[in-house]
Image 1 (cartoon, rainbow, N blue to C red):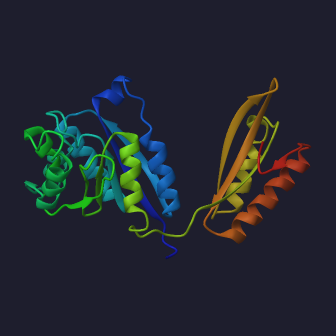
Image 2 (image 1 turned 30 degrees about the vertical axis):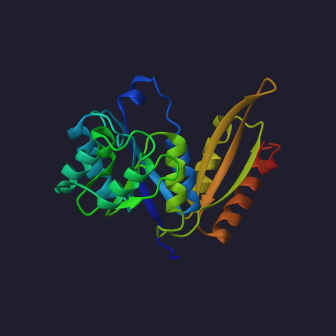
Image 3 (image 1 turned 45 degrees about the vertical axis):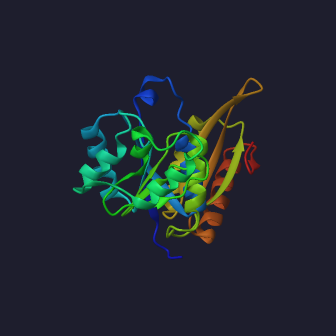
Length: 251
C-alpha cells in the first residue's frame, strides 16, 4: 500500500438507464466496493447504446484515472455493443476468447446449447482477460486498466467479488462525522475556514429535515488520521463558539 491516491472512472451504458425504464443500482455498489479496495470513484458518465459515444467516454476516462469500469452492454443481443466500442477505443480487433467459449458451452450444455446470440458473450477486445461470473456463466472482461461488467446488479456484484483484492489501491480514506440541528447556511463560513486550515481534509455538508427542524451532518474525510482528528477538533470548537449543540457521529 502506498500513499498515492488511486482513482477510478465508471461508464454506465444503456438506453434503458437514460430513459428511466431501469433504475441504476451499480453506481452505488461500484463506489462502495472501490472504497473497500482503497480506490476512489472520481467520475461517472451515463451514455446511450451508441458506439461512438461509448468510445468517447471510455477514452476520456481511461486516460484520466487509474482504473475504468463499465457496466452494461455485454449480453447476447444486437444492442450489446460495449465490447465493440471498447475494442474501437483501444484500436484492437474483437475476438472469440477460447476460455470464455468453453465456459459458455459448459453452462448452456443443458440449456439448448451455444447459439449465435450466446456466443456473442465470448467476444472480447483482443488481449482481454476474463472476470469470472458465477451467476450466469458469461464472464466480464479485463483489458489493460478497463473492467467490463454486466449491467444486471447482482451479476455485477459477483464480478466485483471476483476482483476483490486484485487491484492496487492507495491509502484508505478515513472519515469522521459530526451533526446536529444546524442549518448549513448558518455555518458555511466556518466550514470553509476550517477546511482551508486543514488542507489534507475535505468537509462535506449534508442537510436534512427531521422533527420539523432543519439540520446537517458534516463529514470530514482524509487519508491522514492526525489531520482528520485535528480538523474534527477545530470544527467542534467552532460549532461550540457559535452556540450550536452537536453530536459526534452525526444524527
